[in-house]
Image (cartoon, rainbow, N blue to C red):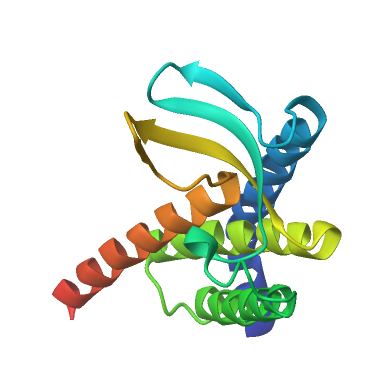
Length: 164
């Protein structure tokens, strides 16, 4: 068996995880689009967590949301570059096992949000956490996996640094 096939065989669990993240993200967004009126809020945990239905044409915390539309291409392109880097990193064994899981989470989240940008021109957000009058910006399943993946990457980097 040549090394190229071995390297790709090593990718399948992470490809599966990324695919599951995309499926969970897209299913949840379709559910919101079908069942929650735009800009409406459904209390889940009164005073703490609501399901809502909002759009974000920008990036995290609505960065560049007011731009004229070019930002969707910027963010989609950035997601493609990050995805290619992470896939090559997994394939080349640049990360530890936790780093590979983190990369798969980030890849799945990035792809989920790119699908929204291509299909709708914006990202569908619906998870809204708040306490009294303090609101965290609404986000989605893809964003959650990107953040968890980023945190795991930091943990993996610290662990790998100790071993070196």
